[in-house]
Image 1 (tube, rainbow, N blue to C red):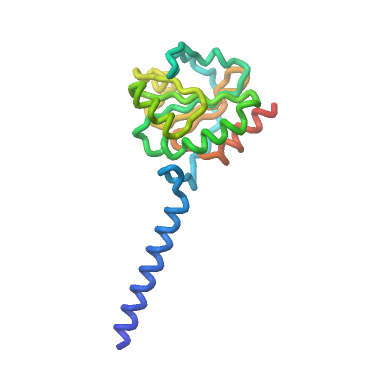
Image 2 (image 1 turned 135 degrees about the vertical axis):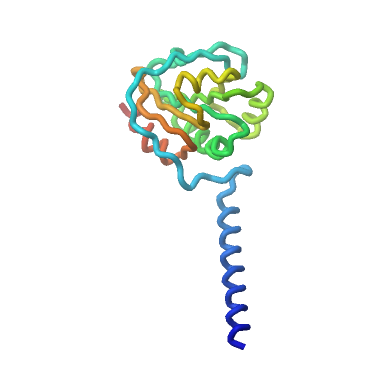
Amino acid sequence: MHILLLGTGFIFIAIAILTAVIASNQARSVMGVEKLQDCVEPMKVDYPAPAIQLTDIAGSTVSLADHKGDVILLNTWATWCPPCRREMPDLEAYFRAHADEGFVLLGVNVGEEKETVVQFVDMFHLTFPIWLDPGESTLRSLNSFSLPYSIVIDREGTVSYAWSGATCQSALERTISPMLRQ
C-alpha cells in the first residue's frame, strides 16, 4: 500500500513538473521563436572599425562610412541560425525605440540568397537596414566565424563592444543607450 501511494505521488510530481516546463516554454514563445531569457553580454574592445562595403536588399551599394557620426550596431546573422532568429525581435524593438537618436542597426546576412533573406525580413517585420554578404567577407574582416556576431561602433568610428552569440534588449540598453546620450 505504501509503495502504491509513493508511486502515485511520484507520478503527480512528474506531471506537475512537466506541466510547469510546458507552460514556461509557451510563455516564452514570440512569433514562433523563444524569447531570450539570458543573453550574451558585450565585451569592451577598442579598435578601428573595418571598412565594409556591401549591397543592401534593394540592390544599392552601402558602406559603414555612410554612417559616420552615428552609433552603429553591426549584427551578422543567417536565416538558418537559431540564436540569430531568437534575437531578431529584440534587435527590432531596440532599433525602433532608438532610431531617431543617431543610432543605426545594420543587419548583415552572411552567405544566403537575396530571396531567402527577403522572406525572412518579411516574416519578422524587420525595418532596420539589411545588407547582403554572400561571400562572407564581413566575418573575415571582423576575424569571426560564428553567428550571430555583433559589434558596436561609436560616433568616432571605433569598435567599442563586440560579442558572439545572441543578444537581448536589456543588454543593448545597458551597452548602447549610454553611448547615444554622449
